[in-house]
Length: 59
Length: 331
Image (tube, rainbow over all chains, first blue to last red; front, side):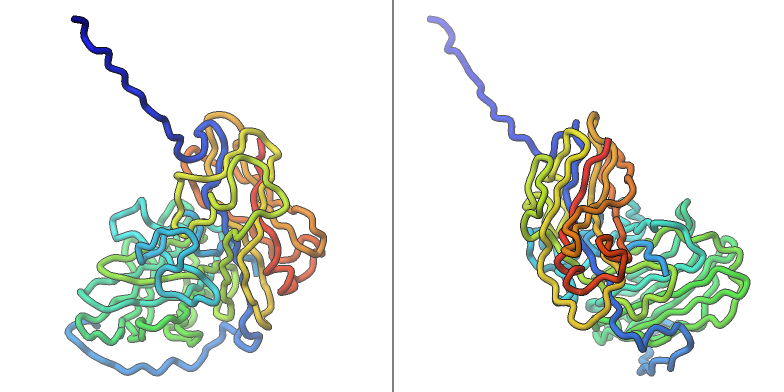
């Protein structure tokens, strides 16, 4: 009695762009807008008022 | 003003909510302008740091971004913002430190500059509310009559006054990272002048554009989380692939610049460079950046158009929001 023939079949699934080629995997666009002309100055502004909460030694 | 970098889905940034589905919202952000917030790496985890390389070095670096501080928990400075020189040396640093257990979102914000091997604190640690989506802007001038200014919600919070920062090396990149908790930055803008008045709108590929060169489709590059499992590949030079952007309503805001970002790499053969492409309705013609050299590993690359290349004039809101965008392979 001969031994049974064992056959293994595999399927190759390519993942990602071919490594031999230049590729991009993400492309986005971004638009920068000026929200207010009146707020362009970098000069001193009123310091924001903060509620000073002390909790432990975080100073 | 020269724009140095911008965006928030730049190919090295991932949403901090863990949402990985394509075209799904993720994080805590302004949904009218963005579709996700950034994930940031932990301290010591250099590989996941988000470096934003500038288009050119500058001694007047300005950076702005939207931030949501999340729920305070354990101590620790949980967001660091750095202006670094080209060799990665830290020149200026901003830290946010939540207050343990208050649950109020009150956090200390500190501003430092490098001084020899140590860091000099500018002003005093200042309390601010981080559990609110608000804008943080840093303005620096590395000169003998220099300054450091930090704005929160468009108000000047920490001001160095005039200080000698002439020993600082020119800034070449912005780095953000954090630890010990959640924080949600988005809409990064870097320029050579104040970013206080600026906001950013993010658009992704909603459909194909006029060109479909290369192998792959817009669905392979539109994810929120970058995924190198799929993409568009280019076997030869001169291939163009453009995309139609998702819809953004810019309202009455004046457009300052349009940027295109791409996560890209070269292969073992074939094209070695990439151009970013923009196609405005003003002339319906593809316009390209200078060639950008790619590396074997994926990197984030950006092209910046401060004016409409079809008219060489200021962008109209319609043309900025509808302009197709993409890439071109270069030998």
